[in-house]
Length: 513
Ligand code: ZN
Image (cartoon, rainbow, N blue to C red; front, top):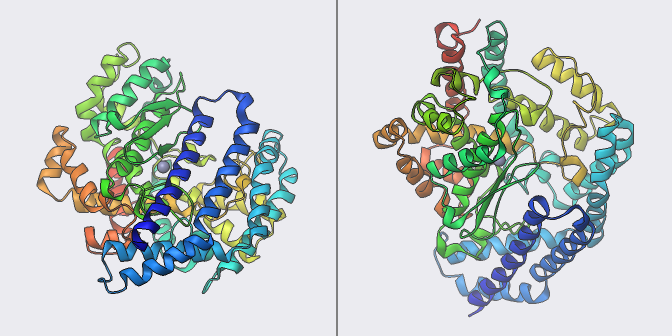
């Protein structure tokens, strides 16, 4: 009985977390401006209640009793794994002093306004005290959590369990070695035509195209919907209600189109979790306190990037679907060929802004931030020296001079929320997507499907190997089970090399010396 009672309690935690997600979704899509202040209070109240429900004397009693009840089961028995996950989360939250949590919440609540003002006025100095406090609180959190080698490891644990500064070093080195020569070679080449991407594309028709493409790859609208927002995201309130959002620029088509495909990729993951795991630890991030079925931020990003890039930016995809885009935008795309469209949406242009970066330069923005965060946390970089370090790295990677802090250190919202340790997952996701796609597309049925527009076989591979398990297995365990090895950058580097060698006509399929 104890096990059943513990699961009912986790079900309640999941209910509270999903309720917070709904309030967040509403705040970012529908809520009028005036609702912000009271909405923030509602969310704060719910998050205190959630933590108190999880870390209570009653939950401790239930965990203790459930551990005895499942003691004799096999180590990989679902019930035993669930109880172990609850124990881990319980210990995690119990170790963090309430005072530290209170200070982090407070900081997070004022941070956004301070950051937004500093960014608007291009004045990093205004943001310095807040960022110093953020670094110091996160450093305290790392000490409370404990770590073996680097304090930053303790912070990444919440988002990408198992990843460390020393595991990232060889991964980043390989990406730099593999991708920088491509970027340098492309800089010498002529750019493809892309003028037509900036014609006038009415938002309602962009919405129609985005939704059609999301459905084409398997997004289930019986359990989903697409809305408008400022910063696109996907959110699930159990697998039965998984929503996506995108933004519409009337003068730039790719933002909404690839935004919808990206978020639909996240949504496929959540819609594909085994229904038996609904309201259980396998559909609840009990450490991060977020209702989600994906096992890590990186694993989640692997699915958005796989469907957005490996599928949605492929030549085969537009050979099949460009006609649909032209039906919806007959005038805007009248003088454009499939080939021109495909080349244009894959253009490589090193720039200052992470969220606007193309597939080839994106990881450099991530590496920059991850290394800077680690250096801030271990004290080897001071907050006041941040712009100098940032700008020097952009110069080193892209040969560009950062013209202002608004286009440099002040561009991301992340630090204003008090959080450090969340950047590496974007690159982990890219690498994981490369590895999964390479293995999957070796299956003839999947390769045929990609050529003929039948995405069910690829969806089936991902559902079987990744989605249905929810949070049962760790990221690397999923990779070993599906591809035979842990995270490996080679397929990703090979994919980018082949793709951009074709688009830009680089010599020898990627030897760009
Ligand atoms: Zn994403």
